[in-house]
Amino acid sequence: MEYLPVEVIGNILSQLRGARDAVIASATCKKWREAWRNHLHTLSFDSHDWPVYHELSTSRLEILITQTIFQTTALQHLAISMDEVDEFSAAPVMAWLMYTRDTLRQLHYNVKTTPIFNIIEKCGRQKLEVLALAHNSITGVEPSYQKFPCLKSLSLSHVSVSTLDLSLLLTTCPKLEKLALISPDIAMSDMEVSSSSLKDIYVEAISLDKFILEADTLEAMHLKDCTLELFEVVSKGALRVLRIDDVSVIHLDIGENTENLEVVDVCNFTIMWPKFYHMISKSSKLRKLRLWGVVFDDDDEVVDLETICMCFPRLSHLSLCYDLKDGTLQHSLQGSSHLLNVVVLELGWSVVSEFFSEWMGKLLGRCPNLKKLIICGVVSEVKTHEECQTLANFTFSVVQLMRKYVHVDVQFEYE
Image (tube, rainbow, N blue to C red; front, side, top):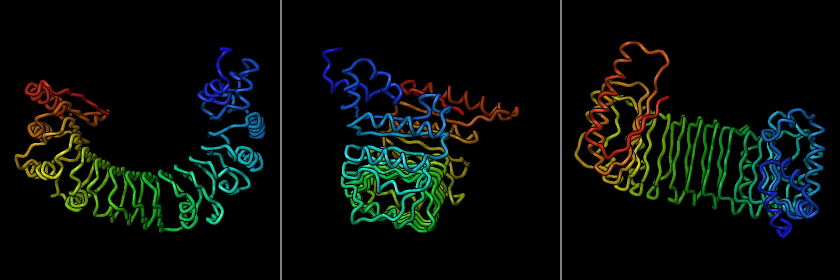
């Protein structure tokens, strides 16, 4: 160990999960203390890492963090996450940011501060590549001098910010590739966001009348637990991944250029299938299509398997879960085209019915190269005799059916 270069020791200390472990390890010998002082690049203070954090007063925590940070000289990654701390005083937080501003590349901070101050004014902006803020405020953004020339990832969770300040902040990040907005506190009902470099956006727990996103190079988009009247994406057709989870939206527009879509994952969402299909119909490169727990706006609407076969020839993973009805079931299985590239088929129900086995059998027949079948279902705690019998009949039919497809790996997932 004594022949290890001091830089390597610094890397070892930086790989430890929590700041406390790194402090203890640095006491090994004089050389390790030197590595701590001059070559440690990562520090994490997380209330889940050490139970004693919960027993310390806020002022004692502030002193502990201050003493630890001030013993280092080359910190690049700093993470502070204290779930049970109501708020830190602004003075020590500013001191941490000012002390590390010349070297810091990643900052994760999720504790409220009092009085409120603008964190982006104090953190080192010249080298910062990742910024994740929670339970704080961003105000008075000045693009003329508050620039983040290297920032690639920005995450704002439960952050109070106006639509104007958010828009101005994005203009100060010319290399921004990843943006996450989680339950932001926004006073306005309309939001327009623009970024020429953005590739990935995640939006969760947001309620707006209008959300317009302009991002020419956008490749991945995930909307979760949102309520929107209008959501519109203006891009140049680079979108590859679209995920929508438990979203209420009246008008959804992801643009006409959807040729590069490879993954469409829609869950717990009310859709007008003809309109939604039209939106993704040009996606000939689609590899994964997941329509899970979807509700159709019209009772007569149905996912047309023939249309899926014809429009998505590269599809390799198909996941379907929605209420089955006799009339619509027959319509959805019309045609004779095959899903030649589908190797994983995932089927599910919220209420098991006699139609499920027939539907599954027909789908298996249309996937000649299938390798894996995943059957997902919801089983209630209290079941009547009729429900138990239905489940038993379904199990029997699956056993009978799979004797014809012995090459397919079958997996059951119940909840």
